[in-house]
Image 1 (cartoon, rainbow, N blue to C red):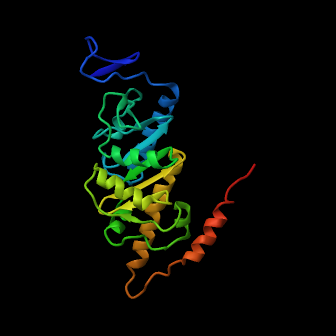
Image 2 (tube, rainbow, N blue to C red):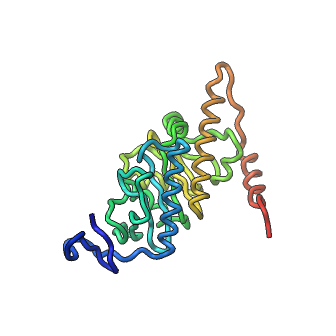
Image 3 (cartoon, rainbow, N blue to C red):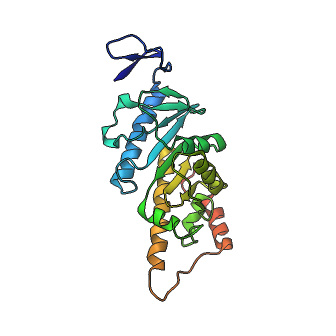
Length: 240
């Protein structure tokens, strides 16, 4: 296993591998962000939003994106496993391979002011993604995601096509569904991005539950009603 010393990657028991990219040391703020990222990733498992390593989480620190590595169970991630890339996708921290969904994460950071992204395979949200092209306005909390939640057309995971489809679905939104795949949300913090994921999964579960009652059709909100909530949410919370 490789370890980091100073500004270059050194193979255990030997000299720097000239064939590998030079990596820099982890900065204190990145170490703190990594700790929060790992806690968030573990939360997606413990709260049933992903199974195994099926989702991924990232956080932006300056021009570096810390991201969960590919295929590593979150409960095995340690402080020394920091994995980071530049906005160009070039790895600058760690020796573990970044998530296969890196193109999707980077697309969000390149086109929005987001500082964190959470991607899950939440059951109810994924089920809804197979049924509609937009989550029906079953609850006013859709306003917290910027409006009606769209479904990005299916594309193979880890591809540029999926990232492009996602960006179109995210236009003016902080969350979307990925057809036959899962969810993507972003926010100013990991906590906000995670909360939006949980809220989206809850709304999908709510709609599926209401729509499953035989002989009855759920009442839905109008665009005007949602706009009123959007305005109200601007003044929501504590001040001062």
